[in-house]
Length: 139
Image (cartoon, rainbow, N blue to C red):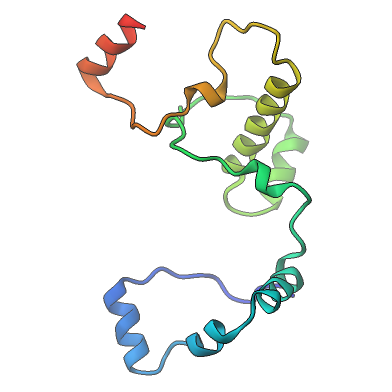
């Protein structure tokens, strides 16, 4: 079943006002009363089943900030990503990340001059400014 309307952002105050006026279409009580099996069945009907092994793709921790680059892509490749709607750059990044991770898993014995993506992840935000440059110089 395709989704018919766009999602919109509202503040917590706006949402509460909408609830008070009875303007929301959510039925919280019905949703909370649903069994897990019903939730999964509805999700499969609306979005399709999750691919086997999807839970192995969950990434924990903070990713390194993205870096702006200029890249030349084949026109057909770019058209395909854009045809799937907004967020095409995020999807391109996800495909490239998956490719790199697959290669890193396939070639674990090969010593790389650069750290792997999993080694670059950290639960600590990167240090910016002069302190960050000094820390990087010591590494």
